[in-house]
Image 1 (cartoon, rainbow, N blue to C red):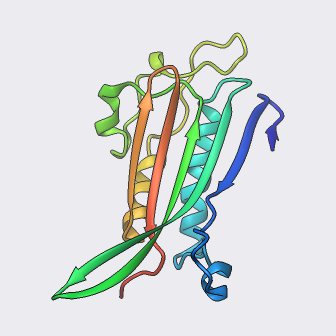
Image 2 (cartoon, helix red, strand yellow):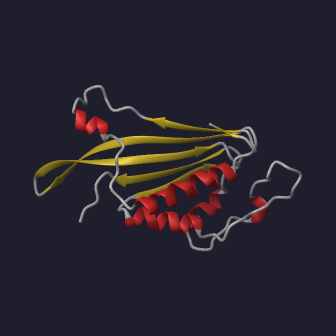
Image 3 (cartoon, helix red, strand yellow):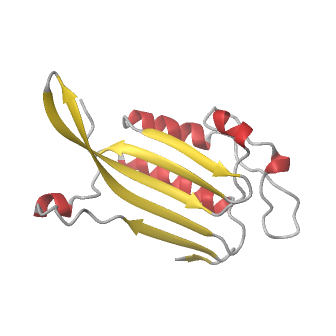
Length: 169
């Protein structure tokens, strides 16, 4: 998909299950997640909208879904856990390293002088209240997951959200 205003290529990459997986029920629900639909929509809408907003014209935003299988041991018993990992990867302006530790703090905004230009002749602009990523983190934590960010200034940013496939009661 191409975002027409800025000619940004938006793509979705589903990482296929391993060839050894043959359970039809599991394959059919490979990327199925139990959670609050409205909150999850808000989470991923926020991350993708940010990526599109901070990616200059002609850039790319990729959303990648993968299922991560893990093995845990509790009291000598072995059981498998599955998590859904969603990455939102952009070719945007990046985030300064010094801003990364505070990025999920409420009301925190990166210095406007260091943010993007809109592609027009406008001056650099920062929008928003500084709540979007704090809300995203709260949603992820409510779903017993993790969110992290990696960024290279002037090149790209990747937000990685990892959520358990099923919530523990």
